[in-house]
Length: 180
Image (tube, rainbow, N blue to C red; front, side):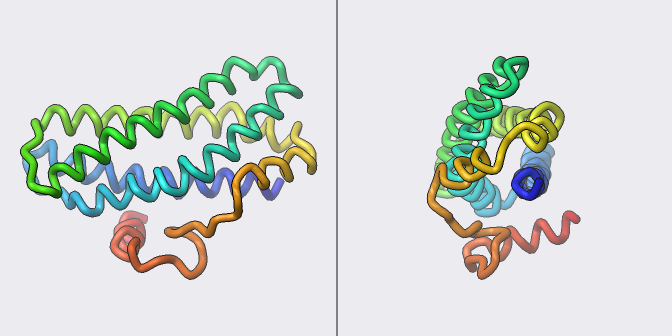
């Protein structure tokens, strides 16, 4: 059960970050001045950790779960596909925010559309995993399966929520603490 608890805990963290990002987008939508550096840090973290560690591990879990639960194959295939969509949406949003930080003028609708795409896909993706996959994974996956999941990528310390966290994310950690 411990790997499923870790999986769920990461989802909680990711949802907190998406909430902070949403508040910045809402500020932007209302004509205010969002903290673009904070937005970029959120996306950078989610791309650096989630896209490179969390999602590849999930992909291994999905493949193993599909073998044990054929009724989940379609759901798992969609979730795996969403990992690629989330990565591309994150890249597109990151590029727009980086351009704004660099002084470029970006149409408001373009940034809002990119942010909405990222937020909606990511939020729905997490909800679907929580609803349809985690309990089944806890029940069906074996110790060997979880070992394969753990070994899918090298052990990388979580730069935001792990011990000895990097100074780069100090403001982001503060914003999360304020939101909870």
